[in-house]
Length: 169
Image (cartoon, helix red, strand yellow):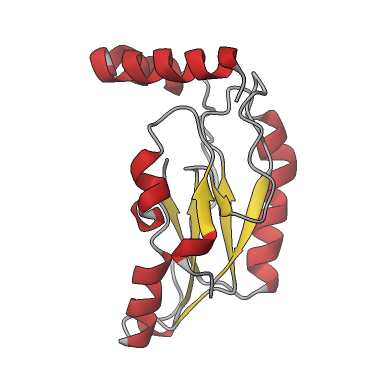
């Protein structure tokens, strides 16, 4: 991590901690409100659904390239995380929150183990074979909306995923 990125990370976390309302206003100005999108409902009981995780906490496999946290606009790419991944094979790369605890216990931001427990107990049908790690804090969302999200939707459609749980970072 570049020194400039390290400073930016520390300043943004300090700003968020000390001025939460102003920080929320700042972060929300970079989002687009999409009205008129079609609604959807789950067509079968949750006990029969295949469930995927999507996290914006910068979660990825240790063997994957880390997210580009030095990119001022943010990294609009995503990482595929198999449903059978062990927590010890995960890490996080993010600058807008303190990742110390998430690196120690990735289930804080990517509860894959807990999702597998729900599948084993019959509470959900199955854990998706494909789960997604994104890096939140992207100021220019155009690339994510144009490139990454349609690819994620396609992955999920191809895998017959019924429900996707978003775990924000």
